[in-house]
Length: 555
Image (cartoon, rainbow, N blue to C red):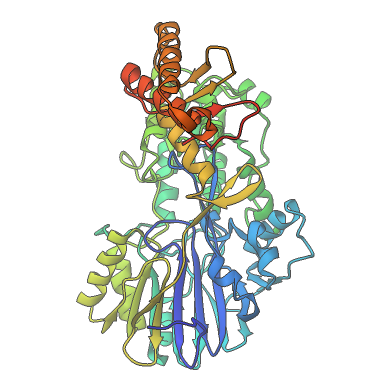
């Protein structure tokens, strides 16, 4: 097994994030003593990390080897590929590479973090732009995705070529951009692709992902169907092609456009600065939108994933200047991301209570995925003819399934890896050769901390079990505060009985233990927790405070 983890005369792959999960993509390629990072993303927190919004991959492995890291190449501008840049780029201290649209969004993030000008940001101006970084020669290859300037990377090394797909799909009518053609991809395959490192997100979809052109037609038909009604469309802010479509739909159906959501405002501005959405209609403000006849406005809003602070949630909760009433229409031009079912259902129920008509991609083709279904994967395999397939960007079940599809398609070697696995791609038989430290970090307030650290662990326990504070003063009954225990009406009796239990427990201490602050602390803590379990069936965190005496931390 490899122990020093420095790439020798070989080609290595290491995912620190994005393998075994969807999001938080951080990939490393190594050869001839050097590493190259592809993407530096994050993910959004769920209930697993109370009080936390952002989650990052633990970069400890590469932070200890920054002298060998040559640069960070960014495939596209989704948050799960660039979201961690402002938090780690300064510390890593290496150049960034991105196409103009992505670079613009990254620059704004760096500016907000006070790093603009302190981190080298290189813009790859043209399609199929090439950069040489140490032993790596990287060519950007445009592929269709649900954002402008989605790119695959063709990484040429002394040990073979890697085709790193990034996020992608096949789309004959992409609306925005000109993806690399089948002929170009076949030519790349004919020249030889050693390894295909490939998006696994939609491997269980037996059908192609669908075209933005088809969505354009479906949205046009759907909005036209609701003539005379106020229509709101919620979609992913980053989907520039969808915004282009909605602008055209509004124009052709005689509606003015109102945009609700700061991320939409930002994407429209960045898009127009980089040559996209140049004919997007002039938008109207909320007051004007509400004064227009109902059939003369099209509202584009964030919040289709149920985000509580996004525009749609606030509109549904009557907490926004935009108002929807019975008969109005909301089109969900976005897919339901796994894990968001409950918050989306909450918003849809609030809208239903108002009598709002809702249409999703289940009723009409008003959304298509930005990731490849099985037929698209099989087509890419045929065109590129790789020797090795490394599935990424998916949960374990997605990656294992893609390995099966690749094997059935005749790819000789399929390597299913997880975050922290070092995979040798060449020379010799490809496979895992070592496991390195990996994990998660969280942005907790203004501090980046371990996801499994004491603060998050304690907060999670408190959220489930509650907390008790016991103050022991000499000569007085213990003062007790119980928070989060379901004892509203019984609280006085519970407090009194717990005080008695604590005093009895302390009174049973004999000899040196009766004078030992640690023993007194533990007796009070255990008796308080037992009382809570007896009364409420909960095991709260208990904090015992003993003014003037040494004490242990609560457990």
